[in-house]
Image (cartoon, rainbow, N blue to C red; front, top):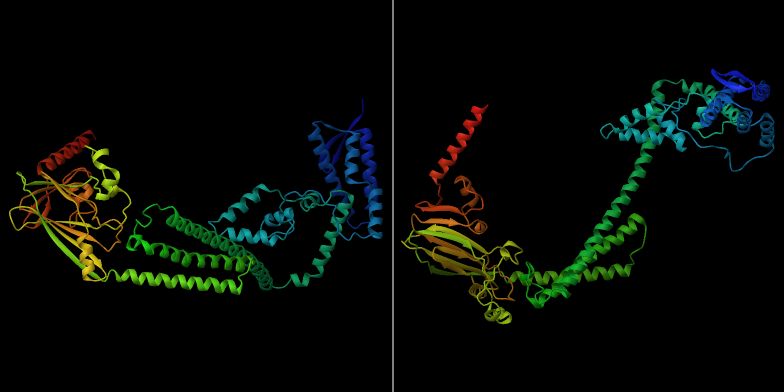
Length: 552
């Protein structure tokens, strides 16, 4: 059983064993005797006592006990250092010099710096924790304030969360200095030297506020300029990476398209618009010229970006000359083919054909988009349509998908001058001259079919397979007698001109996908409004509205 006494270290009460107290008392006596010759010995010893009290509190909390024992005191003294060790360290410091500086630092702790602050010392505390200039932290907070006040909000939160370095031990922990006898003395000497320096510069510091503000503004804008330069270099690098990625992506796409068109397109590699304007024997040459005209500038941009932004690689004079010659030649070939192709559109011609339509008993006509697949003679022989597809109907849904060429069908509906309906088809085409344009118009085919009152229109004008596109089109004029009733399927909306099927259905209270109903009048085709149905629907809506009001 050991005797326990109560001691007070700077306002903190501890229970300590008598043997441990004697060791601590002798240690503090030696410390006070050693610093007695110092001008501020009381302040140094007080800071040392505060640090010892913090260490005792940490030991009690860590070991979950209430009494300081001899082992604890020895551990604290070992960490703080004895006066004899401190004296030996001073002698070594006087007789030797460490060319690599003082590495006697510990892990830093985050505090607000009360000695170097503009507002609360948050920026200076963060800078001390990461060991760099606090100006950069302040500059970062100032810039982030421009983004919806984010910097100000973060600063206030850190002001509340981060504790202030109130004691010398806190300030030493903030800067990573060892909290032992040597560390306390060194910190105090640095503080005294800083105070003397401040006193010597008192005249400078006592200058008018406008001068200090000028110096602060100069330092701020200097560091801000350095920050902008660094930021600009980073943004330039990012922009260079973006250019490289974009050019690389376009280059890969160009290579893929070239390989696809030349090697994997099958029997009809040019059966898509605008490639259909070229003849088959010129198409491959045009593809190669387009590829060279695109890939050479992309490669040049990639090489220039690597050299200019990243200082990597170099473009030799001979390589650049070869690239330039190839690019000019490919561009010249493209211009040559463009002139040749455009010459095939100089002349134009048209052919008109009139088809008689069988009248219906009730003078009603249903206009639909034809969904039957029509085969050429060669396709019929190749697929053996008669044997393989006997009594079958092949549906053509290409009008819902990708069109090889622009829409070439325009349907107009007019009042007929005679008592019976008729269909007028006007075939149009272009060519090198009028004769060629006339032949091109003659070689086109449009499929129209009538089944009783149903008039079926094809979705495209068809030309001979393998022939280049020469702006072939057809204008269809359906002439109907007075008072004829016309029901137009919604799939014809992209082909019928001068009327709006959707608006007619909305006026007639019909569903948007139902056929639109029109009537031929003296003023042309007019939307037919079923007044009975509309009146019933309006009455129903009114009844519902009155019922809702009554319920309210």
